[in-house]
Structure formats: structure tokens, C-alpha cells
Image (tube, rainbow, N blue to C red; front, top):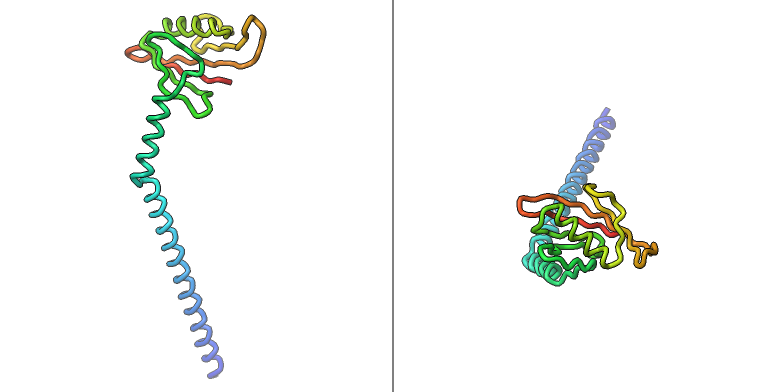
Length: 155
């Protein structure tokens, strides 16, 4: 009978040791997760990272060049993505006036309007001298209180 009790006591010690090991491992993993979270927070909220991102955005905006060369009074390039495939313009003109000005500017550069009049979205195909040469623009207009916002996607 004593051997049965000894086994039970031995099993109890093993169970306690396994529990202690599991708790230590859990505590270690929790500590590691907290440490990684703190490191990520420090990296993302550090002043250097913040100031660098603000500087890059301001340089990007002030040095953004209008790859479509839309040189119209009252239509300003506000921002574009790194590839230059999505451009955002702000216009002081209403949607109809902005459509007419953009169409004129793009046609003078060799773009051909492929959309019917009064469509909410305009599309253009780059075709200098009337020949299909590739490149497509999709232009969306969003009315504002004072003018409109224009989003152009270059495909």
C-alpha cells in the first residue's frame, strides 16, 4: 500500500513541476509579447520617425510634379502616389468647368476623350496624331462647396 502512495506522491510532484514549468513559459512569453509591443510603439512614435515622415511628405508634396502637365489656372495638383499612377487635384471651378478645362488640356497633349458627355467619370486614351499608342486615364470628379476634387488614375 505504501508503494501506491509513493507513486501518487511522485505523480503529484511531477504534475506540480509541469505546472510550474508551464507557468514560467507562459510568463516568459507574456513578457516577450509586452516587450515587442513596447518596442513597436517606441519605433512608431519616436520623434525621429515622426519628423522624418512629416519631412518626406512635405518634400513629396512641394516637389510633386504634375506628370500629366495639366497647366490650368485654378486646378492644382495636391498629391500623388509614389508611382504617379493616382493623382489628386483640387479645382476652384465647379465640376462642369473643371471637366471642360481638363479635357482641353489633355486633348492638346494627345489624349483622346473616350467618354460621352455628362458621364460622371471621364476616360481618355493616349493617342497622339490619332493613333492608338496606349495609356488610359480614368477621371472622377467630386463636387465640393468651393470647386471640386479630381481623382485621376493612370492605367
